[in-house]
Image (cartoon, rainbow, N blue to C red; front, top):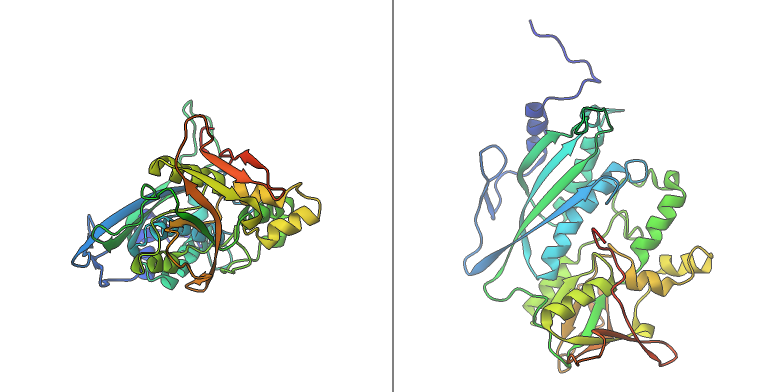
Length: 355
């Protein structure tokens, strides 16, 4: 007779995978075989190409257990990859999650474990965008360092998103042209401002367990519908999502396209949370957050000056914030026109690993 597992004992890997499988979709139009075999089998639509992106979510880098509700950590994990698909105008086909957690995070506390709640966050967003979780891997994160000393186990999650896009039509960073107009969706700096507020009083955010549009850091919204519309209507010449900050991601777009840019500071849409942080004296400049704050997950795109771009796309506000220019020797890659009309170099000041 086998010993009964007490409610506070962690589930084994087999039971954990079985529980995840019960919560995920079976076959869909794009997933012929999901969780349960050595590999998933995907079925892209005829005439389409497959696009793939992968993103780490690392504890103490992308989230903190003592700050972020587990649901937020899960939501953010998936949103990062979905935003990459949005930037290429792709339709999501499937998600794959590989996660390592300390064993205690698989133990149910008041009905749900931390891992259960993390999955709640992923699956709620996945359901909204009809993205099946089709596979992945689980592991217990190490509790000992290289010399055998005990340490605290950390959560590491890697999300892989597979999408499809019409053959030869994907939006790229490398196809902007001199003379194109630069646009951005939504408002910027809100995620950085909310992160600042979160760090000042984590307890105030502890009960936010469901997605809400007024929480751009905890529950960012990937602009999939906007990306699809930009592609379908042939509006954009190039696109990138804003994950590391406007200044840094705009530099990537310029470098890949081989052109320069002039940005109008007065036209940049600054999020109300960043404006409030400045008004309350928390930061000296809301514009600084809009320029360099990361994880807004808005879309930055270019369009021909002959293209009429609507003020809203798929219900999301769109603003013109600058113009692409030919690169000139001795001139800065990026230039910003201040509200007083003075032109100054704009340097990439967003997030960079190993920076």
